[in-house]
Structures are given as structure tokens and as C-alpha cells.
Length: 254
Image (tube, rainbow, N blue to C red; front, side, top):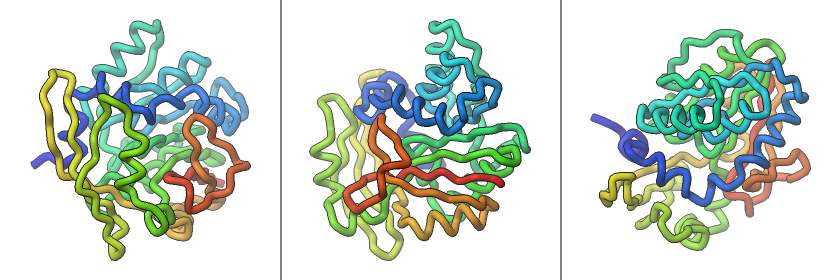
């Protein structure tokens, strides 16, 4: 039986690219480039690449990129976009919980909840961090965003998603936040690329900073830095607060 995230990303490439959270791609890639030291020969792994927005932008800037995703539909859209842009990108259908790569990449990215933290168990989410660690070379970095567990302690996730929704985007209803598991449960309603309205019962895991630090270090990373994640404007200058819906994590394999 397919999980909600598998069903969500079937036939939703066009719709995904219209979501408001995709607007910050160029600025986010500016930050990734800076973290990469502008080394154009540094191989980048885009985990949960979706329609390839970060992969394509980084390849356009001259970086060798491999993009992996569980959804063949999203990968097909990514390949189409890369072809139209005249770019050669290695897009592969892979499960982030069991990747085949070992000591290959200088940078791994998981932006906008690419894979992590969508999995149905904490163990599965942790396995994604472990696989990212294994895929990286010594000295490599994992750059990812994840949902900030401090936010729902002070704010309503339901109101936040309602206020930030654009016309035509997915609609999140019936939100309930479980303090025992730090999961937000919601009904996601959206129209797929074929014009069919779909309704899915979804849940995502929120993490607090000490959890993320412990998980990353348990996966093998040594240096772990956490900041507030601002759409299209990632920065090491933004201290994480309860006002940030997402956190930005940079974990190093030293």
C-alpha cells in the first residue's frame, strides 16, 4: 500500500512547481554555492529532488548534480525541464532510506522537506540521515531544511498554512498537532496535473533543535549548525527562533 507522500507526488509536477514554497530556488542555491566554496567540480546529491528545481539551477551554474526521488512522475518532469534547459543531469529513482552511494559527493541537499521528515517512523527518517552521511566524502556537508518543532508550541500550524496559501495551491485542513509524537496530522486537498481533485490524510514530523543535533551526530556527522530557514534567503546569520516554520541544518562529515 502506497504512503500518502507517494500518492501526493503522483501526477503533481506542474502543481508542485506552482506552490509558493518553490519561489526561493535561486536564493537557496546562492547559499548552497557559498557552502560549497564555489568549487565547480564538487559533486552535489539532491535528495528528494522532486521536479529538479535545485538540481537544475545548480547544474546551470556549472555543478555536477545527481538528483534522486521516489516519484517517477516528479522525475519525468525534472528530466523534461533539464532537457528543455539543455542540461545534462543524472536523475535517478531511488529511495532515500537505502541509497547506493558511498563517499561520492561533496555536498548533499534536502531542501523543503525533501524526503526528511515525511517518513512514517522516526527510524525511517534517521535512516535518511545515515544514507546521506554514507553518500558524502570526508569533509562533505549535508544541507537540509526540516520543520521546526518550536513553531507549533507557540503558533497554529493551521493558521500559518492558511495565511501562506496562494490560490491554486494545495489546501491543508483539519490540522491537529500531537505533542507526544511532534507530528502534525492534516487533510491535504489538491488538484493533480490531470485536473482531478484528491484528498489525502497526511502527517509530518516536527523536530526540535537538540533532536536534530543528536540525530545528525548519531548518524556520524560531527559539526552540526542550525539556523532559521527563510524562503529564498538562507543565511548563517539567522538565529533559529520559535517564529521560524522551518530550520536550516548544516551537518559536516569531518
